[in-house]
Image 1 (cartoon, protein in one colour):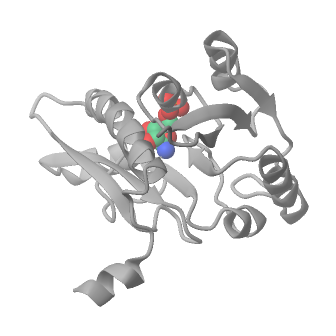
Image 2: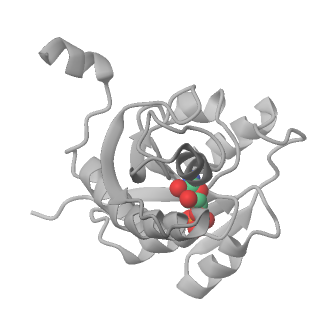
Image 3: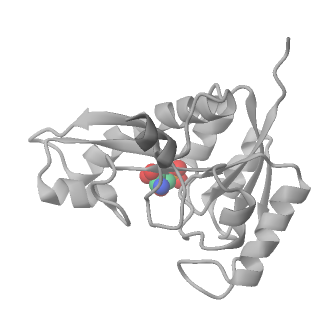
Length: 204
Ligand code: GRF
């Protein structure tokens, strides 16, 4: 029996290497249907074009790190009208606060370049490097109201070498991000990922 396709929207603000990894990776039954960006000049728009995925810019509102409420509702309406079932954040430089979280509760994933809960927020790789950790890594997690909080789906560790710079470490982490994002999306789309911490706590 064929599994129904899960339509995915990727939201990104920058280069889009994780977007590319999701388009090219094995996310079945998930399929990337559309790329939406809050940055008209983002490289990810060009990448979407090259990869044959519809890419569009949508105005996010006047704030720098979050959406305007009306605008977040417009994004949510657009994605719902399109039949999107899973939203993947891939370097979206804004936190979600209202309408998107409500519309897609338990159906929004994010990739973060640290072993959460260590080093949430901006420049996680730099934070880890400056702290002097010997093991760094990346996390795919469900998105909730917090910044880089929410139930973890997958993590991958990478070693930190004496010879590393912040950028060489970031590059090593990014390679693993590309692997685990597709794996986590596939797990979610196949119903193998668990959202609720409450469920997990009750089992313990
Ligand atoms: C990645 O490091 C990701 O973990 C973080 O934002 C960055 C996006 O990079 N959330 P790219 O645009 O996917 O190359």
